[in-house]
Amino acid sequence: MRTFTFLLFFLILLSCESEDYDTTVIGDMNKNFDIVKLDPELSVSPSSKDSLDINSDGNFDIVFIKSPKPAISGYGSETNILVKNGLQIALSDVNTYPDTLSIKTWLDDNLIWSTSESSKLILQSFKCSGIAGCVGFANFLNVSDKYIGFKIGQKFGWIKVDNTEWELKIKEYTVLK
Image 1 (cartoon, rainbow, N blue to C red):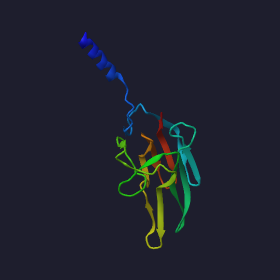
Image 2 (cartoon, rainbow, N blue to C red; image 1 turned 120 degrees about the vertical axis):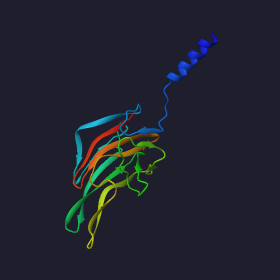
Image 3 (cartoon, helix red, strand yellow; image 1 turned 60 degrees about the vertical axis):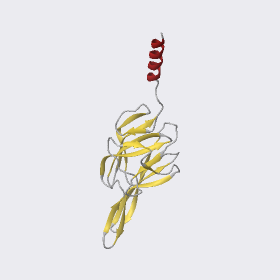
Image 4 (cartoon, one colour; image 1 turned 90 degrees about the vertical axis):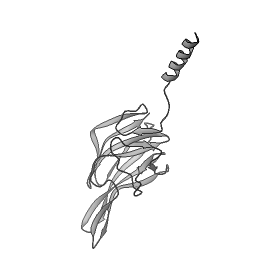
């Protein structure tokens, strides 16, 4: 009888679901979020913006902004994100801009994260000088199928994007439960 009680207790213990949110892998399914594949994809062109409500609470957590920017000859554009409501973005350890993450990247507290206060972060921009012309900077210069890692509290997720000088496409993202 003792063996049966022990086995029953052990099976119950193994069947309990953990509420551990301390790691997520980009591209893998996870019980803490749903992957939303946008069809059609969101497209943000210069002089426009669009937003996402990552945790489905009725408040937009991230705003994508494409703005025209004067250049030496005409205009170019820059891509920014405005984060709010406690959303944090994974930053590069090389510079302080949002990192271009790839599929199967582990998202956890060991990454460098932006503050949880509302802030505007640069995905792509450029600086111009008479000698060098206009030189692009930040980490989302002409990228395809790259991910922006984020966290809210202890839950992690991602946003899959393409970015060129003239268009930002948001292809899929995770909605936190």
